[in-house]
Image (cartoon, rainbow, N blue to C red; front, side):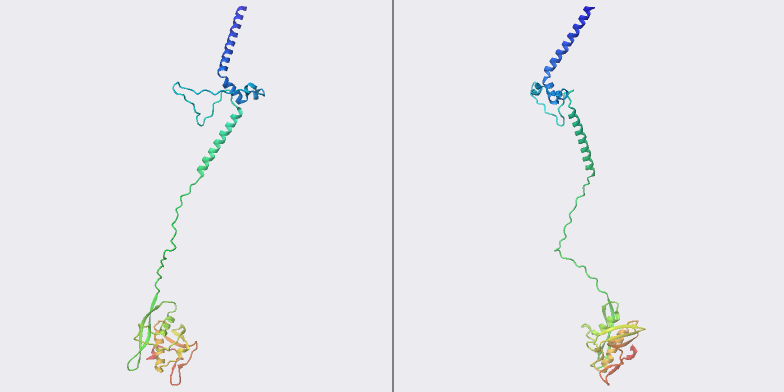
Length: 287
């Protein structure tokens, strides 16, 4: 029994020696990696409280470039990938910081996506050409003034000296007071185109006002209308011109003459030359 136990103990010792030798060989092969990791991660300082002096003073040897036997190839770091740490030697603080950085990067990326979705690109604005202020302005044609045709009564004097009635048709501007406009055109006399007739209304006469009531047109003339230099035929002719022109309107049957707004019985320059105007005149008054 004792011999079996002794053999078993020897076998265990041999196994432990073998494991120890393997560990020594591995340590010798990977010594630089182990010491570098212990130094970079402050392993002893975290576990024991202080780092041995030989580890602090240890200089890590640079690894020779790998070769494929034909050409020496230097391995370049892959963009975006960090160096791989040796298993079992992770730095807890670095790991936590890496998680925070990853979370922040994801949050920033989400915010960027939201910002890109919310951005609205305005449509391009087309500049309108400036109007040339120096260009000649085109004036719109003014609408033609509306006119109305009226009949005006003038006179003609024959070779025997007789005064005869002469009517002409003239276009005058249309307005809301056609009787007033027509009598004023009569008082102004014939135009250059109407040379075959004349007016015996005294020069300087003005129509001061006109109104129509119950078929009677009250025409108010200035004081010049009261005196005619030709005499009786002149007075008769001037009254006739006004009465025939006014009664061309359907609403006028007779004319009452006024001088400076007053009703007078006579117009004239003396006892021998005068005309009654105290009552309205009709066309039949001149037959």
